[in-house]
Image (tube, rainbow, N blue to C red; front, side, top):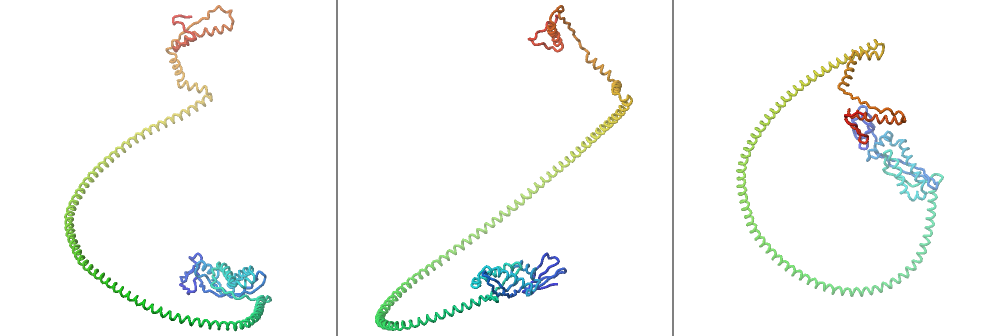
Length: 476
């Protein structure tokens, strides 16, 4: 369904596919969507606002406000469409809304002003009310197109303005009486002053008339003389201008003749110059033609040589490419052969490694089986000897021929030794000495044979400060 709004109307569409609302002058109404049409023309609202001044004097403020939607601001139109458009602009709801805003702002403003300020500053008061009400109407998307505040009116029972009017009337009547008396006074005095001034002015005018007549007569003669002089001067000036014009004309004629002669000479020279330029152009074109012909010949030769060189270079390049491709093919085949050899060697190595791995695996399995059998054997042997460790050890040493091996090792250890036995005496017969000294003497007697044995076994000698060994042929 297609809908079109009139020039002063808007379509408000909502529903499927529209998040909030959509304003348009025309559009399709799809299934699942609804629409309304609202009028944007402003409406006049007439109110009589009852307010009170700062002196607590009540008064009536008749006002007419022309209010409508703000058509030049789309966000304001959205506000108006959502908040006001569902109601008739002349309905009680909208009127009470606007009236509440206007009354509230008017009362707040009038409460801060005196009655005299409100009465005398009607224009400023109207502007203040207009601005404050507009701020409140912005939240509804409304705009005050015009505001007309009428004269203030008394509230019944409070005749402030009536009394003020009576006061003004009385003041005006009294002032009128004062003005009438003042006017009479000024009239009588003025009439006398007028008579005296009239006589004075008549005598003054007579004297001035005589003076003016004499003065005008002298001025007339002077003017006549001045006119004659000016005429003579004018005639002289005209004669001088004529002579100057004749001289200027002769000068211009001479200049024009000179220019004509110069123009004739320039024309002749220009013809000669143009002839020379054309001759030069002909020669240049001939030279250019010969040059182009030579260029064409040289270009043809160069093109032939270029094509020949290009063909030779292409042939040489082709031969080099084929040779390179042959070498590349040979290298690829060699690489493939080396790759096949390496793969064969790798396969052989893998087979050898697999064989060794299999042998080691079988050997390990044999050792594992042997160990398991020996473990079972030891468990049975342990059970047979009744848990006697010494009996089990001796049996194992005997069964493993450990004792013969130990005997053989000991025999090999002492085989080839040639022990030397030295006999030393302590010179007996001295039993009567002190026992302590005997022990010391015994230690000293033990040192020589000890040093001798060490020397014979290792070849080492004792330090000189401890003594020297006897010669090898004597015994002490």
